[in-house]
Length: 394
Image (tube, rainbow, N blue to C red; front, side, top):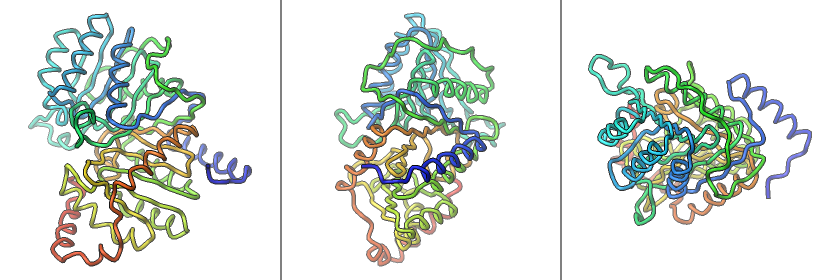
């Protein structure tokens, strides 16, 4: 059951949050349909459903697009959409999507308008480290997927027990119009004019279990001056927590201000739980992350490391009331360098499903005990300290 909260207090919190959200450029859209996508299979299946079901327009942004069975299946689906007369526009990161060159070329020949975001060029070194890390698919301007899964075998658990753990949401309603505008903002950063608006509306494409009356806010760093928006939004969300904060994140180096707020919440008696990777595809980043465990542990924050599979999801669940998920990690790259896209969803069934999924990971994780962590070898601590010095470049 949700935590009890007196109606006047809840109303005041909501007014203050909406005022702060407006100040930070986070419009609130009510009356959406939405669903939680619990893992890579759910995200990729929904993506294929939107591609196969689109009637007129498809738009997407992707960080990694692998030339493997999953990546090629999506490319073939996009070719099928083009053959049906669907306009296809896509923005693929110039570094993360490097392996997709052949598929991008084939789709361009078939009529797709695909752009590389910041391809590496010797004469533009300032852009080398500024990546488009977003994962977004929009069909016919009416349904959209936002999540953490890229397009590749690593993100497809079926037949792959070591596949990454991911999460996302699918949306239908007024919030999708915000995502269309946000896609246009990212598109302009690829040195292209904004595409024409898609034909909004139409019958539902995805036939999964939609949940009604979802309140949605888009948190994006694509708009001009928006790179600080993700960091500010997360701090704003932390200021709203009153009972419980659950965070699952792949690359966790959040900075001193966020760390202080997490400690403060735990020291006030709130349940603050971090679920982080025990096995990581980026061991140097993991080492840097582990350097900041001690102050969190001594402050009362509980830390679990997921074993046997790479935790790639980016999820925060606040007071059993709100779900914050998307592409952004809690690290300097997502807060200061990358283009990122998250959504804040308030809908009881969706939040409950996400919370149940989070809790289900804890028995498959190892809790970090403060005493054992303090007793680590000097070499282990030195390695973590050394990695942490490079946090701005990871």
